[in-house]
Image (cartoon, rainbow, N blue to C red; front, side, top):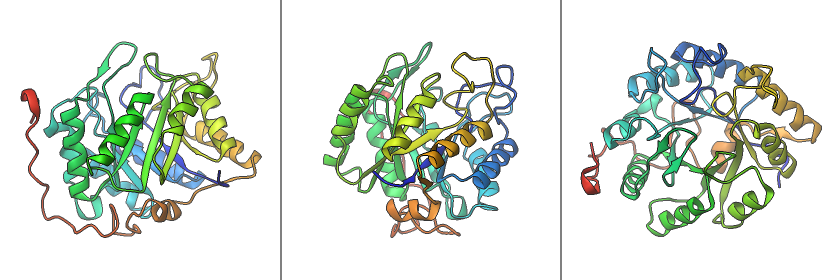
Length: 306
């Protein structure tokens, strides 16, 4: 356990729309604004999703580049993670496009979901060949994976990728709990997943929907990291009578951290622990040569490629 808590801020996600909550940031300007406010409160890292002008999920590197440039103008040390989700766009070309960003726009990390899974109404399809291809491209580009783990089997696949030499320590993982078809916000489920983590793994816990507060509270009490934001839950209360804002969710996490006599882990310290470049113009994993252009996309099995 530690007295410094990783706060992984997830402002947008893929699902919330303005018709459901006016507080969800959609445009790059709105997302940058919420990240700026979050930085003033105190966060360790941010997990970004791109949205198109019609509020649908996007993947284009231009959208990500606009957000990253805006954030680094005021937070050049903040750890930035981008999404490679296949929940909507599931070609390698679309999912990996953001990995081509370079120089001051290069993301430090990128999400990597370690198996397919079902949500309430949709599926996120992550074939083994897709996971391996994305992991290989992240390794080549010097972008550390943010491993997304929804169930115990995904922890086993985490260890499999290490054996395949596609992941290098230190590792960072998010346990995302409470989805209907996956591990629940249950101490036994959480314990089974954490027990099997490789050494040198930093991790955060996030709760989907109602369990968000309970999961965040448990993580803080144990000295683990928290994943928090409107991506996972846009209600402030379990009865769903008060719409949350990103600031209100972060403010509550800060109060719990303070009550536990703990602190937010500063971005610079997280960079050191994850062996990332120091920021301020240098991004990605430390010691990785800057590639002039992205590597060619690996050919996927069964015709599922770019």
